[in-house]
Image (cartoon, rainbow, N blue to C red; front, side, top):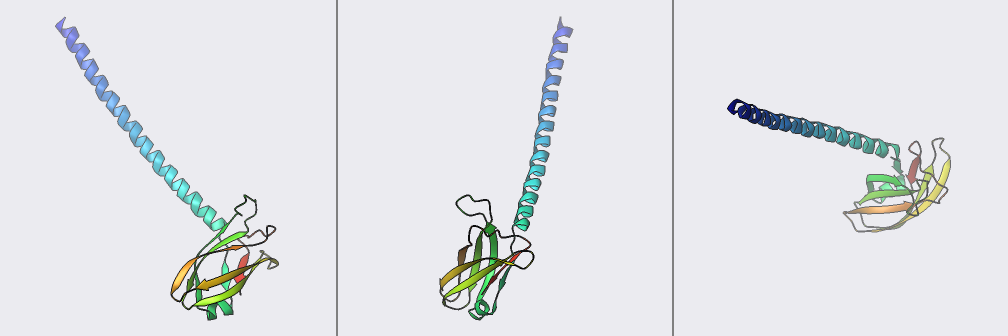
Length: 149
């Protein structure tokens, strides 16, 4: 009977080791899958950001007012509309500014597709986010541009 007990004990210990090996393999596989998913999400996010990147040009007037841009994002209207007609701009003000700028949106063919006004009240050496909401018919395209005048 002792050899049978020894055989059962060895089998149970072997199963425990095999179980740990399977568990380690599953954990490693999950880690690799997580890294792959993370890279996919990062790539998708960058692709979406590039897709919705709208170039913004500063005309002579904003440059004279000491305005430069930081990050720029085109987004859909807060009402859940399908068009991308809102532009979020991070503006940097070297000088004190109390003025209203005019933003003109153009499509890929250079045709004007919308206008929005941007009232500014900023202290010198300040910065902050500004939101430009174009008419709902305006669809800011990645191949188009916005000019601030």
